[in-house]
Image (cartoon, rainbow, N blue to C red; front, side):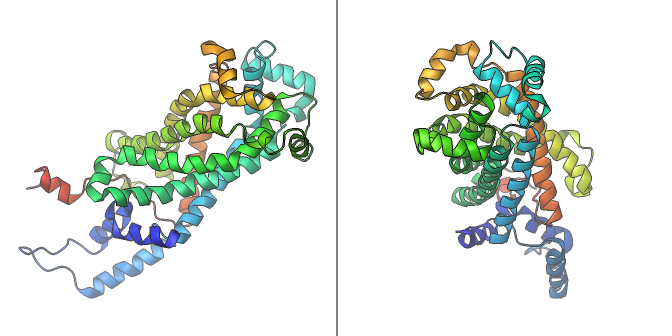
Length: 362
C-alpha cells in the first residue's frame, strides 16, 4: 500500500509542494516557448543532490509514512500520559458530578482520598492506548491525504482542501479508535470505579473474565462519536489556521522563517484547533466515561439519563486539557519531522493552471 501511495504522491504536485518549491528556488524559472532556455543539466543535478541532503526521504514514500506514524506515537502517547491527573479528575466529574463538583474540588478530593499516587491511576493503559491511536491517527492521515488528493486531482485538491482534510482525518480516526478502545475502557474503569483495580495488569483480566471481549469494545461506537468529530476539527482547523497565520499574521513568508519560528506557529495553530476540538467532542466524551464505568448500559441510555446539561459537565477542564494536548501534539509531531528531516510542505498555493482558468495571471 505504501509503495502505491508513494507513486501517487510523486505524481501529484499538490501532495508534494516542496518539490515544486525546490525546483523553482534552486534551479531557477522553467523555460517557456517564448522565454529563455532553462538552466543547464548540471544545475538540475546539483539541485537534486541538494534535495537529497535536505530531506531523509521522499514525500509520500513508505519511510515517510512510517516515520509520521512514529511521530504520532511519540506525540499522542507522551502528551496523554502527562495529562493523566487532569483526565482522571475530568472523568470523575463526568461520572459522579455530585461528589466532584469542579476541577479544583475534584483534585482536592482525589488527593485527600488517594494521595499523590492516586492522580497517576490509569497511566499505563493511557500510554499504550494513545500511542497506538497516535500511530494510526497521524500515519493514516498522511496516507489518506495522499490518496484522496490524487482522486480529486491537483486543482480540485486545492479548491476542496478543507473537505480533503476532513475526509482524510475521519478515515484515519476510524482505525485509530479501534486500536484505542480496549485501553480506553480499561483506563476509565481504573479511574472511575473505586476499589475495582489499580493497575492495567489487574483490571484487564478482571474485565475479560466478567464480560469477555465486549468489555473492551462496547465503547468503540461512542469513541467514534467523540473522536471522529474531534480529529476532523483537529486536522482541518489546524491546517487552515496555519494557512491563515502565515497569510495574515506572520510578517514574513514561511520559507524565510527559521525552524523554531515555524514550530511556534505550529503550537499556536494547534492550541486554537484544540479549543474547538474540545467543544465539538465533549458530549460524546461524557457518554464514553459513564458507559465504560457501568455494566450493561447502552450509549443511548446513558445519553438520555445525562440530559443536555449533564453531557457538558467537565467542559472547562477538558478545554484546558485538550487545548494544551492538541498544541503539544502538533508541536511534538512537527518536531519529529524536523528531527528526521522529513519533507514538511508549506501551506498549499493555487496551481498555475487554475490561476490561468480564473484569469489571475497575465
